[in-house]
Length: 409
Image (tube, rainbow, N blue to C red; front, top):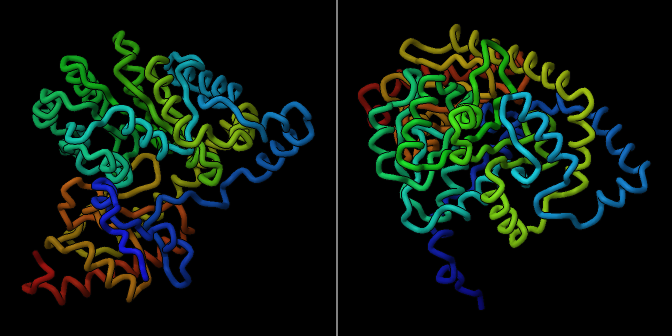
């Protein structure tokens, strides 16, 4: 007899969306995937990783640490290196204020566990990273959205949302996933001021901050808060997935030590600690030629972004619009005639074999539907050119067929 298990699923799990298939699409034969935000594997620092592993294995003391239990806060030499890196970015910290996590995704989950009770309000931008929406959703909050786009943050809406005192405001200020846009300096200052006024914490997701390939950098919200004397208002989250390798599963949280110690207690109850072996590898890497490696990544992704922008300009039909990022991994495409991106995805997978992420997933209310995220990170420049050409042909055919029919909303 088969167990009827559906009644045992928690309310939180029942509301979870099905796991997306974007990562698997990248390796599916015949598919050109602009879907997953997957770094270019050819750019992983294999030689440096190999040298770091050799250094660990050749040292009796290092290899003993690498394969042993460790404190939940993380490997201290790596945390010390992060303190130095934050200082280069104008942010003062110490090892007591840094926790190593299994990627930024676990960092967000720990923050959700720490701060969210059922029915609490939290504030997010619309759009924002779909995995953050899914992660926070497990804790059953009410999500209050603040519009964000090429004209910046809707500050009037932000003031109304933040005045309601949500538990926190989640932001990706640099090369946002999914739009590729940056929050301007003035908008950062305004949002910080509102959060200080209403005593609301900011979660600053800096996953793409190191990947600026054009233009001048903007001070992080963490730095702006410290400069104003309100550093306790910000928890900064970041990752090595975009700069070293996602396979190492390394992210981190920086913030007030009292808050970070609470997060460490939650991590202890979750998985004890992050892989010490991975942490030792990262500590070896970022104290050698890491800056030079990141410069190479910026050159690589800047070239790929340029190739995709050129292809969009020459291949997409009239009425389309898209962002022009100065860094990161993504371009946000808006379709004409209110075409539903899900229908375009179905047609493009069956036709030209192109995959992307429909835009509705990046909104808490799963709308609007006439936008999508394109990643230029994974595929080669020739694949970008041919893939966008195929996508343009699929879109043109869909527009022709759907005008005046149900696919045009």
